[in-house]
Image 1 (cartoon, helix red, strand yellow):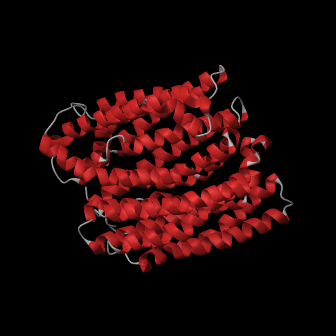
Image 2 (image 1 turned 45 degrees about the vertical axis):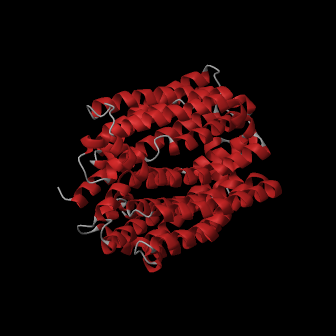
Image 3 (image 1 turned 90 degrees about the horizontal axis):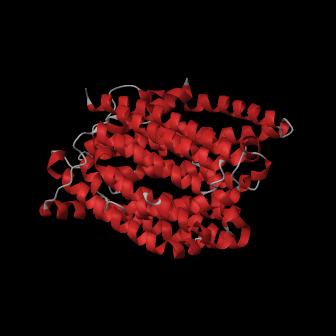
Length: 486
């Protein structure tokens, strides 16, 4: 099987996996939000996820990515990767356990201490599971990935729902996540036999740390950017406001998770295979970006233009304050999809210094923008600040970084032109039709259908990107666009 065929097959399974899991998570979230858990519980959970996200970005020092990137026999260095990962993950969790009370107070939720200590045990589990997980990614074994993710989802969801309806509150999220991760770890041991054997070679350890630390630093900056808004919201506006913000952020992330995550499971491996050729890498990135944007624009635009009726219909009127910030975060989600693909491309091309520079600049501009927005306009100001910095600072920075790999700005513009033009048409028709229908719930569905119908002819010529033996990650988004254009 050719590389393109492997990527194409992996992309289809990855998309199916992502859609199934996201639909399940969505249904569980709606049940919890409309039932037993309110904004405060969601805010406390968001506090825990901030801490967990930061730990996961650095828990194995980036060394596990060598399993995907290095063109060597994995058995030579995988045991050293496992040992490094487990040691660093355990050390990080020990620091978090001691610092949990102070961390919870800093994040504006002093009663989240127990949640932090339970939820962040997942960082140790992740450190243990990193080797089999990366072997699965290296070999494009998306069937195994789907089985493990489904197992994790079923156990996590069942545990969380049972505990929540028995009065466990926000702790139900923590115990559910821990149970699901433990079951997934057991599944990893079965799916990749022998991958959980530790070992040590000093020379390998030095090379792995040298390779991984810059990538871990870049990942930490990414996580900081995605979580600094929650830190600012929780610390300045409190856990209830954070609950509204977190729900809006989760809704805005549906396209990111359904589209970008499906592609990212194979994009780093795919880009790595063509990283030695600037022409092939540029072609693969342009095709992949065009397909991802074509698939992502419709849901992001509809969430931005129909935020209020969507929140009311799905979650109920008590969550109405989340609609204002959702308008900004939905457009931010569209940019995140493009930036995550660019991140994987730069990482695969070995541009680690460029990655750190781009992320550092983004974060430096983001913090004051979020503080200003929160003080002046509440959670809506936080979302607006996020979007402004993503457009004015992050976009030029990523274009600069990609240019250093041989991917010119024209490649990016050509990839995004039709989807963005179609998105503008969608936005205008969505708003006009919704108002014409009297801003009713049924008007929301009519507006969405009309807007989608106007979008398809604009991007239909992009079907040519789906044809042929496309290199590397160019086919990563193909299944998404196939569904969009049919």
